[in-house]
Length: 197
Image (tube, rainbow, N blue to C red; front, side, top):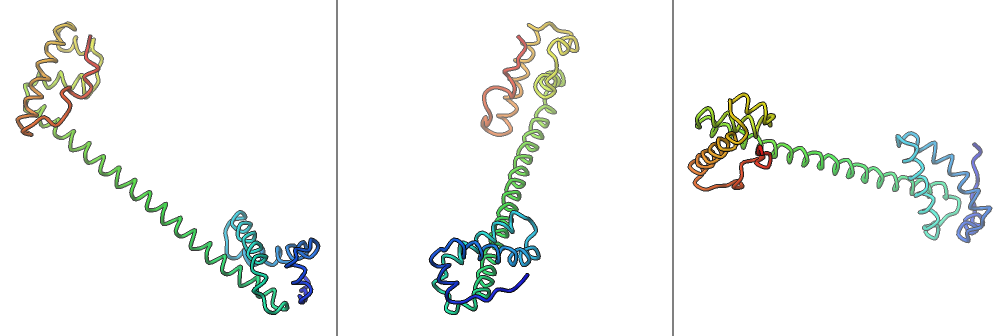
């Protein structure tokens, strides 16, 4: 690529937004910036974004240029500033994404701990209950078993299963209240809407 000698007249025409001069400027520096940015950025989109921002800022700051012969250095300096801003923006974005992942992970861990603690508490209460009642609650609410299969397993019809289930839930609530001092869960057993009809 042949180097171009910039002068006051060229910069004046740029300031006045002369079409031909602006087209030459963009064509000339597009290649030079591409060479520089290829080594600094890893995507075509990033290169295009930074290059466009450099052009925008150069046109906005042409009034600050004191020596027209140093237009190349002026463009290079603005490019370096835009690159630094780009790096800061990308690192902030990465840090934000990492923080979001960390918060989401921490939130998931907390949810898992609460769920595990609740499950352990339910299992402890079931362990203190008579085996048949505990097994009925386990089969219906925790295992979500088929009602017909549960009736066969316990040798009862659906109407009597409702009676057994009612007793088992009352005992569970009583155990829960006794252990916690007050009822901290809904008055219905988890999943009660799935009661056999």
